Length: 289
Image (cartoon, rainbow, N blue to C red; front, side, top):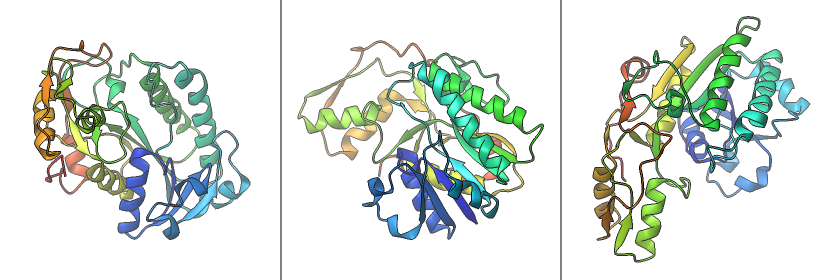
């Protein structure tokens, strides 16, 4: 397949490009600065189109009809989920960008959403659960989803909306749980200050997620929403205790040093019933590798 991808320079995007190339797809990356990812091992294996989402170049519009789909992994300011920019600016930019590509002939858009669209609901969350996001970032994502669904009433295209649960792996954000833990280990600290740790979360390794996204995108018979996760809920404390020996460290978790996040439910994970029908298998490899 001929696949466009935005956000190729992001955490998920870099691993996703690898997965797509390994599956023999022709990949065209939309990037602001191609030189910025020149060091990636796959840089010489794909085409680049220099692209700012606010002003997509004619070169991109000219090739939309020639490509089978766009995997839209781009979204900015992920270091601050509360920033109103997600609703006030980013939403407008992304809907205009995607609308322009569909009008230019693109027939499928596969968009990376977030589990935070479900808000503070607990338990095993299915795609049929109502979306009640509490932060600007997931509110922006949910609003984009709604506007794209509305756009389908007037323009003919498939829309795949992938709600990603928690992700672990190389190049993850500095504020993520395991990045902070690894930093504490690297600094030689004897203790890792954390929350009580009894919250339940659903993590997936980014390489497993990349394969999952690729497989769903290849399914041209699927139009709809699907949870993407490892399907193995566990407590934060258990995950920390599994990571420490993986890192060859002896640091001690110091629980109860921070409050529970106020924007996440205490225990939630993905209902993977729909996912299991779309992909060959849920991840079987260890989370930490």
